[in-house]
Image (tube, rainbow, N blue to C red; front, side, top):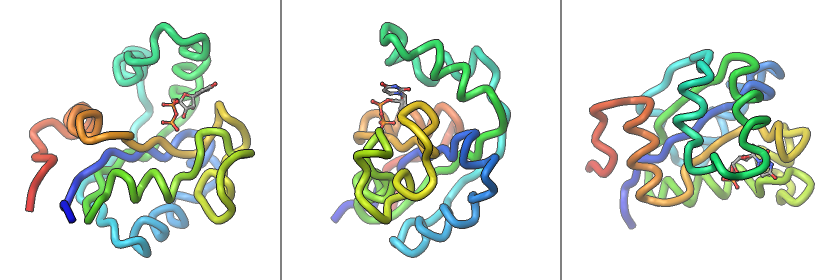
Length: 141
Ligand code: UDP
């Protein structure tokens, strides 16, 4: 199986709930390594650029507003099948539909304030890791 890197963001709602450590523990228990991390309070420009793929969607403005409402914790995760593994740990976008025991089922309040972001495919992982950690080699080891 491929060793991959993926981009994860603990969103402002989960940072405000003080559950960064609990979420990191889930990454580690699943065999994902935090290979880069930084806390940041995103600017509107950064959030708009990061979510540019969604700019025509009706929720874009609210999503950007939410992502800049407080600090976020941003990390690159590495491990076997890291992209899918992280998506499984996260659970469905809407926490009401997320499987029990997933991060969103346990920590998210709504489809807007849903605790975590995770890259959804190899190409987006590459772009997203590079967005926040320029120069990092995504497909290594
Ligand atoms: N989102 C939202 N309303 C929606 C759909 C999505 O606010 O109806 C937000 C939500 O924060 C989600 C993000 O937009 O995490 C990106 O949406 P996507 O469909 O890519 O979901 P994800 O990959 O985060 O599960």
